[in-house]
Every structure is written in C-alpha cells, then in structure tokens.
Length: 237
Image 1 (cartoon, helix red, strand yellow):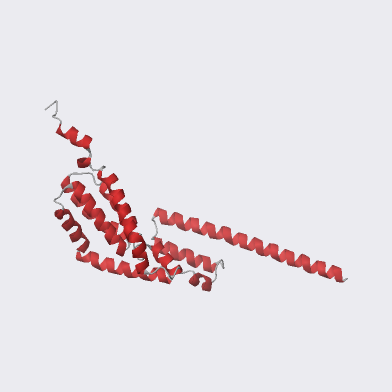
Image 2 (cartoon, one colour):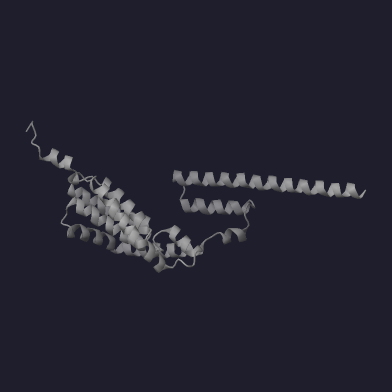
C-alpha cells in the first residue's frame, strides 16, 4: 500500500512537471510571436514604434508571461535616464542652430575643399557623438552635409558614410557616447567615465584616422583617375 501511494505521488509530480514544462514552452512561443509581430509593425512604420513597444509590454504582462515586478525589474533606468537627458539637451540645442553653425564654420575653415570638408565634418561628428547620442548627431549633420555638397557639386555619399562610421567610432570613446557603453558602465562599477576616456578615446581616434583615407579616396576630387579625366580635353569640343 505504501509503495502504491509513493508511486502515485511520483506520477503526480511528473505530470505536474510536464504540465509546467508545456506551459513554459507555450509562453515562450507566445513571447516569440509577440516579438515578431511588434518588430513587423515597427518596420512597417504604420504605428509609432513607442506605441508598439508599450503595447507589446502590456500584452506580455496581461497574458501572464511576465509579472509586473519582473517587467519593472528589467527596465534599466540607469540607461534610460542619461539617454532621456541627452535627448532633451540635443533637442534644445538643435533649435539654436549650434550644430549647423559648427559644421559650416568647419567647412569654411578648411577653405571649402571637398576632401578637407569630409575630414572636418567626420571629426566634428566623431567629437559630437562622443558626448551626445550618435544617431541624433548624424541626423543633425546630414542636412548640413547635403547643403554643403550641393554647393560644392560633389556626391554626398562618401560624406554621409564617413560620418556614420565616425559617429560609431566616436561614440565608443566615452561612457555616454553609446547606449551599450552606458549599460556596460552600469554593470561594471570599475568602469568610470574617466576610465572609458583613458582606455578608449585614443584608440578610437586612431581608428578614425586610419578609416578616413578610404573615404577620402571616394571623393571624386581626391581620385587621380577623376582628375586625369577632368583635365583631358573633350574631343567633341
């Protein structure tokens, strides 16, 4: 009788474990489905991505996939706080036209030469991205870049790509230059703001200096073949 009772308890525990495993697996599939649906809506841009993200989080809590305490625990306020602060500073500063002024000032200082302009704008973007959100810095620099390249009658493509690269490189130099840096600094307390600068700023700008020549060669005025073709007389002329 005792053996039968123990066997019955073992079978019940096994069924409970299988039921719990099936429930966890089902929740995992639901979570993946919600993630894909949210990602699809964000890509379609039919609904604002903030609304999609908030709605996805609410549905996850409503379906019991995560509870409210766990959901709040996974919100990294130490990362969101600096990002929100930087966005506010950038938004206010952009209204003053400071970034446009710096870009145009840099272009004038190099004499309006396309190659020098590319280097100057890339350096300005890298320095700005080291202390501000890099995506926002690029978005602020792009309109100025289009205006300058239109007046210089050169293709803006190498200018834009070099600024994107410079933004990623410059954002690596400081603790607040990129969201992953903020998350790493929050997880590893020994990595202070000055520790990031001391260990990454020099190597970041060395990488920038090594990268820029490849984009300089993409500017038509810096390409020897282009200069040679431009200097040859037109047979039909």
